[in-house]
Length: 179
Image (cartoon, rainbow, N blue to C red):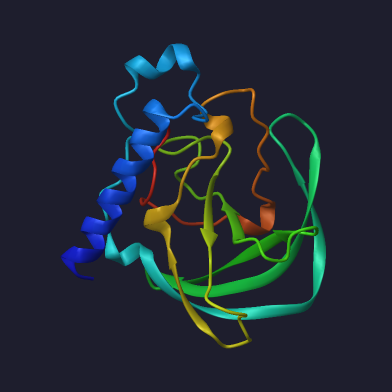
């Protein structure tokens, strides 16, 4: 990957840090924002930008996801992404809420860094493909964009937990570290 990609990633991270420190909708409690000096990130790593093959689920299966406050939320499993990482083959599932077909594809996941170097409940990615995806399409899944959900910063937020089918048996040292 080019330096431009890494520069754009760093700019994205600086914008997020600014939002978290200053915006009224930041998940960081107002009395803690003065001490916030930015998130801790893994260094940008092009090896964690993987090309994935898409499998579309024409009849999406509903999935109940537990949340950090003990409730459940319902999503539809709309896509599966097949990819290689460190010479091994993996799959991650992409979801949408039943009520919002136009929303980004939600990809919650856990890996071997979860609860150690990264947030204990898992991390998220969102993919916003241009147009409808079809079986066999290739997309970039960029783990450098993996982020901690708002509940990592405050218990006032309830966040879906990655379902077991999205638990990766590998280490993904990319994206945000634990807050």
